[in-house]
Length: 196
Image (cartoon, rainbow, N blue to C red; front, side, top):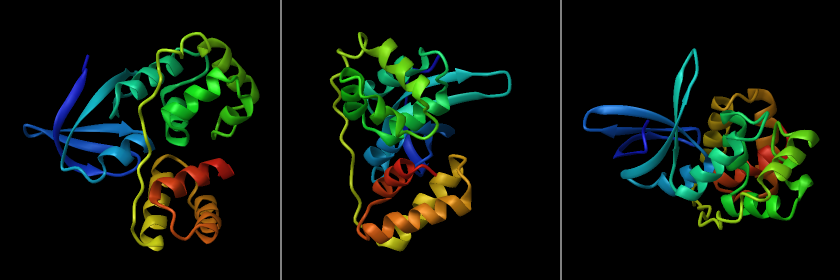
């Protein structure tokens, strides 16, 4: 099992990063929070969680151990898979999700795309006693680029995450109209909150 991969960032977008480690390119699926931390770096070290399925071996990369620990806790909840856990950690920071779990804030957790009432309640119930050690250290980054470039990058990321292009375009249009200075991360978070 991989613990971390350190190397040159060959490619990075809000959905995945390709890390060149001595001539081998590792594709790691990442969260929006990790993207915020590494998007402007040329080299990085990502902590890894490997998911082995019959049809694929997937690597998930995290910039902080708190984020990877919370991802692994989420995977331990019945009905929460890797894609759902990644979506949760892209919609909320470690601090925000930890606080929602500690406060038993069902509505906050339900705002994440794909999380229904029963799953939200199960997450809160099962993780309430396990979340204390994860006093998160993750902070979301900001970007200062043009609105259209940010909107295009956000749209590309949402499509790569599996959301329909027309619905994503519509929601991104609403978000950028309300906040023309929004960064890529903010556009995606707000789009996910709108429920594509």
